Length: 426
Ligand code: 0X9
Ligand code: ZN
View (cartoon, helix red, strand yellow):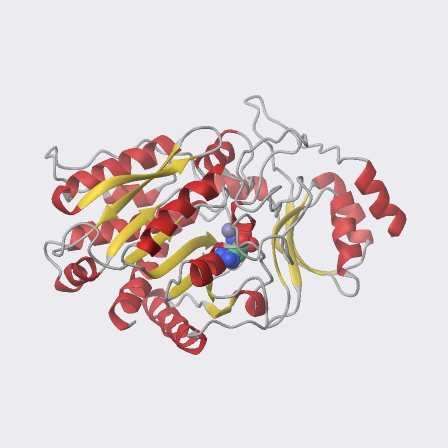
């Protein structure tokens, strides 16, 4: 195996991704498997790489049996089977799953032509192009003009503004502790921006007519960035549905992309991040050296220096987890760790009460896997957020990142029930 690993290091992978006429990666015939590596995990990872398998997610087996979810190209299926590993088929054909997600839809115009009309709820019936996400934010802001403004948290590598919305209540703009949400940091996790937008929608829709929602805005300033990785999202729509990182190029390598969630300048460069630019978990050359991280971090630092951060949530998919600190270590615990874990558990129960969707809760490292240079640890220790969480939305693997559009609304509704519980009880 040492020789194989060496060869993999010397010979950069010749990724034989098939493209269609529009230059889009074709995933027809890829199988998604949940595989139990057994024994030597490093050797297993090298085998996967030689089969050009795509790493979707994994769980280091503190709670469950250790497993990896991988997409195996049709050409490698026989070689994979010859490895005789314990595995379970999650999907027979990733290409069919991508088709099931549906076409990107046109922006649904608000039903009323009035300036203060809410965006149409049809927004949550389909996935949309990035430009439509910006139109949604603009329409949402104009539905609550005196208590909101559009905000920008720096620029992406390709020069796009990282846009969001700031909402406040009766105390006036910037007068309360912050609730700060990030969506779609990982490009392929489309459900995460939709759910973050659903929460923003409910805050705007309820402010004038729902006492509980009014209290949320009166008690906290909300800073909501549904898409913190716009370049990556656009790339998943134009070219490769399974892209994860940003689209940053570097003079030192031909590989593209850094994992923004391994790039935070706190406990950077450790277990669960990669030094290799081709990896999906590439940490960057230096701590905090992605433009996206810089932009969203500077806003976070500003909020911390202002009224402080009550709650930070980094929204991801998939797996159905509510994750508390820390990612960098399985033995470190936050000062208020037991309170965080209790609240995560009861938030999960609130979510489950709506449609029965179960969420696993616990510290990132001991529940999922180690993540050095992740957002939650930065917010917890550097920015002193009272709660610094990551939430992995639907599902548990059947559809994974390509969650059918028919599940967007229910995902938003159940997350909203959870967030209402949390905002009322913490
Ligand atoms: O690996 C990740 O970054 C997250 N899982 S995902 O499958 N969506 O990629 C886990 C993130 C938890 N850690 C922090 N946010 N620190
Ligand atoms: Zn993610």
